[in-house]
Each structure stands twice: as structure tokens, then as C-alpha cells.
Image (tube, rainbow, N blue to C red; front, side, top):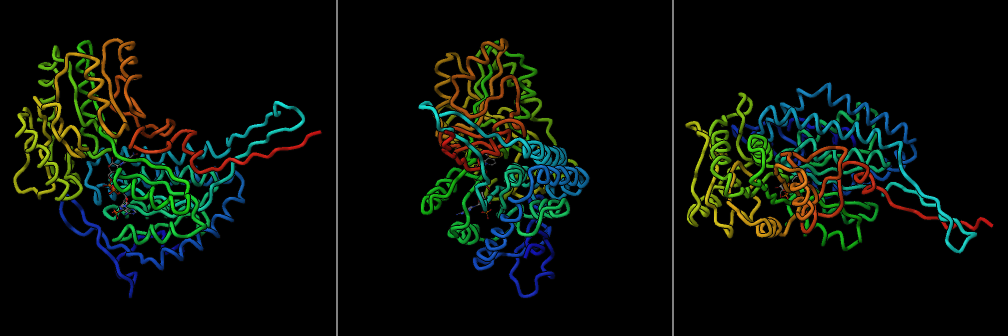
Length: 476
Ligand code: NAP
């Protein structure tokens, strides 16, 4: 079982089994074929996962730590191969893909270090005599579901803590980007992860595989990263068997610039927060609120940087590749069109080379966007930056918080005191203060409101894969 579930092979390797193609979004070319798992195959994988769990949880924390450290080194050694795979199946720039591989590998290193530091507790009950001994145990077989926008990092951010805690995992990567997940599973096998502990199932029907897994009593955990809509459906499914869940869902990040901000730093931060991965990040700045007094200078500098972005095939070194599908591009064009119809102006745009397929979009800055425009309510997930002017701080904070999701937010203010005061009032799980990026393996990543439940990264990430047991001990 494990070899076929941890290695992506061409269709010829699966005689008699259905496969589906993985396409390069920049060229439309087929990168590879992957096995299309049936519900029966998915169900059978739980047997191996349960056996793997028994083996793995019995290993010492030090052993698990060393295996994860070997996987970290394996990813570093294979960094170029992984980068090229991400570029081919996801379409992000080479620089973004290389940064992702490094970020993703760091989750293995971080959780190699955390594996040997599982905390416990010991207290005397207030009435005396009785002691409370609190320990943590691996939650069990964990289902992991990941999106296409960070094919490596979203997988390692879950696999790292799960393995450190002693769980086995069943990973369902996005159908657009399964190849990176298979490559990481291979690296884990080479690092010494035993059979059945990490299994990957690609599928042309996500619900077919995931429903088979979640129906099995031996599956005790779901860790999902993806859209809020799919997250809601999975939460309902998990309610059936009261499965432990962690949810990393959608974002709609505000980016606030005050009149006292260092505008060069703010523009650097805006470029990173908006155009990393071509805007296809859950943490992407979605709405720019810039103080009226600095609006002209900020938009001039930001617009010039956007106009200089090079759009094209990332394999040939472009800064901005396509968005993931033509359908996604069509939806983003619709949001821009809608904003323009409501009075917004396309104030800056990068040139779109001739002959690009319809999944390519010109990076765009919109100004004069009305505060009720649909583009400010929807997660754009593409290289479009809507800018809104503000004058009243209370009003702009209210606008920033007027979203059903609260994943990340950004604040640029001259005085750190002002920035911190604003940050504390924002309904967001993560705030970049004078920074355009918040992702860090050592920090708790996650959102409030409908952006999710739980945290990944840091010591918090490992708690999600453990259960607390308390023993009431008569000491007298
Ligand atoms: P998506 O459509 O929700 O898909 C995410 C994953 O769920 C994919 O593997 C998908 O499989 C699977 N899936 C879809 N329907 C399912 C179902 N009924 N049952 C079980 N699994 C199902 O999201 P996406 O478009 O890939 O990713 C973009 C979204 O992810 C954005 O909203 C973004 O904000 C969010 N995101 C959040 C974070 C975070 O940490 N908070 C990080 C990255 C992305 P298929 O590919 O086979 O459909």
C-alpha cells in the first residue's frame, strides 16, 4: 500500500487504474498523471494508517524528532526539484516557489525541535490529598486537506506537528497540485517515516475520498486549509462523529496606512502583502485603506511598482504568473469590472504580454473604490489592489472589521504606539505591524470569526494534534 500512495508516477505505472492529469496553469501542458483514488481505496488506506499510528506513537519523541530533522534536510537538499514542481503545477514565480520550499521545510525543523518538548502539568487539588497529573497524547489518525496555493507549506505545516505528536496522517492535496505533496511524502519515507504513517491520496473528487475517511471511526482528526465555504461543509460532516477539527479558512485582509507612515516601507510591505504568489494567499492584502493626506504619494509609488511587474511564464523568470485557472481569472476580471462600474478607476496596471492564455491577469491598482464595492467584500485571490481613502480612524477600523472573516491584517503607522493601538482594535488572528508578511513557523497562524478554528505553527500547532488526559491520583 504505502509505495503506491507516496509516489506520483505516470499513468503507465497504474495499468487498469483511473488517473487524472495535472496541468501547468501557465502553458496548459500536462505535467504528469496521478492515480485517481476511489472511495474503496481511500477506505482501505485507513487500515494502514491505524497500523502506522500504533507503530509511530510507540516511538520515542527523540526518534520522531530525528526523522523530522532528516526530512527537513531532505527538503533542503531537494529544494530545486521541489521549486520546479511547484512552479509547474501551481504557476507561481520561481522566487515565490523557492521561498515556499524554504518556509515549508522549516515546519519540519521547528517540529523536530518541538517533538521533544511536549508539556504536561502536575498540581495538588485545592482540597488536598489528590494530585492532578495532566499529560498529552496523540489524537490518532488525522486527515489533512490542503489547498493549491501553497502546495508544500500547507502540507508540512500539518504533517510536521502531526508526526511530532505521534499521529499518522492521510493527506488529500488539492487536485490542481498533488505532485508536490507526493514528493514531500517520498522525502518523509527516505527520512525514515514507517509504512502507513504518511499516505497521500489524490482524487478528481475530493468528497469521494474525504467522505470515506471521515466515515471511519478510527479517524479522529480533521485539519483543513481552504475556503470558508468548504470548511463549513466539512465542519457539518465532522459533527456526525464529533471529530476533532482545525480549520484554516479564507481571508480578506485590510492594509491600513496612516498619515505618519514611512511610505517607502509601506509600499514595500504592500507589494509583498499583495503580490506574493500573485495575490493568491489567504493572508493577501485585499483592501488598502490609505489616509487621505498621503493617498497621492502612496498611490504614485505603489502604482509605479505595480506597473513594473513582469507578467509571463514563471518558468522563464516572470514576477507574476497566471492565476490557478481560467475560471478564477474570469471571476477576478468580473470583480474589477464591477468596481469600475461603481466608480473605481484603474490607476495603474502592468503590461500583459501578447498571446498569454486567459489565466493571466494584468496586476492592477484601483483607486476611488467605493466602500461598499463587492471587490472589498470578496477574497480577490489575484493581483488586484483596491485602494480606499480614509480620514477618520474609528471609521476605518470599523470598515476593516466589517468582514465575516478575520485572518490577517496589516498596519503601517509612523509611531509604533499608534500602530499597536490600531492593531489591538483589529479583529484578526494575525497583524503585520509595519510588516507585509506574517507567516512564520514559530508563530501561531490562524484566524478569528469565520476565518477558522485553531492555530498552526509554533507550540500551538502541536496542541491541535494532541488530546489532554488528566489522572486524578490519590496520593495519601
Ligand atoms: P477549496 O476549494 O476550499 O479547496 C481546498 C481543499 O479542499 C482542496 O484540497 C479541495 O480539493 C478540498 N475540497 C473541496 N471540496 C471538498 C469537499 N466537499 N470535501 C472535502 N474536501 C474538499 O480552497 P482552494 O480554492 O483550494 O484554496 C483557496 C482558499 O484557501 C482561499 O479561501 C484561501 O484563503 C484559503 N486558504 C487559507 C489558508 C489559511 O491558512 N487560513 C491558507 C491557504 C489558503 P479539490 O482540489 O480536489 O477540490
